[in-house]
Image (cartoon, rainbow over all chains, first blue to last red; front, top):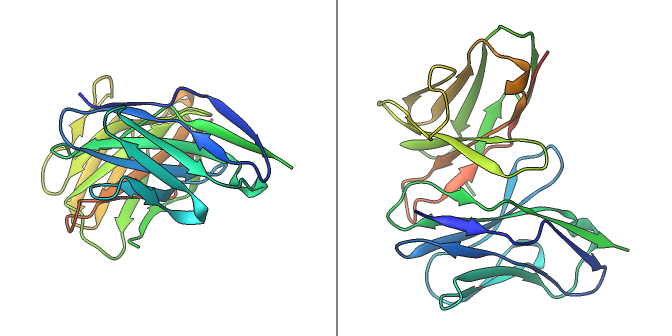
Length: 113
Length: 116
């Protein structure tokens, strides 16, 4: 069965500093990995995905994530955080042979001015 | 990118009534759609997988008679919450899978259901 873990409920970063939001996964086949962001009372906004190819994936709003097969991780990163990045971030995984996406528990990112 | 819409965006109803939520893929066809439920400050819980022209597949613990799903066309799936109760109040999000390419899923903006 596929699963995804986000070990941090909350991450606090000062504006201008780099940020990392952690994600590890477990699938039986090749993983399709995703990051989504959710603002209050809104749906999910797609940030980036890894399907195949380069392990470093660049996405929207300056975010990037690195696929690490040996550590089964897909951490989200940004070199310089903005206050507007404050939101709820979800990592998600789909087994290449499965039909459904499973979400992590979410990490609340708080960027202080 | 592909767009998925949900209607209504917000609904308030009385306990005991039924509420229908629509999920539409606007610029692509989706054989498969998914319904998620999100509790406050919690993750998204997959409720069911909706397949066009066939019965939905429900996740363990989800009452199929309570949450009726119909996927009548390649662009529309509906979720009906029957005999709603206050504990059904939640944020419901649908997604539609585009069969082209890598079968990417696109998410709707969500529907906030409040049962009084």
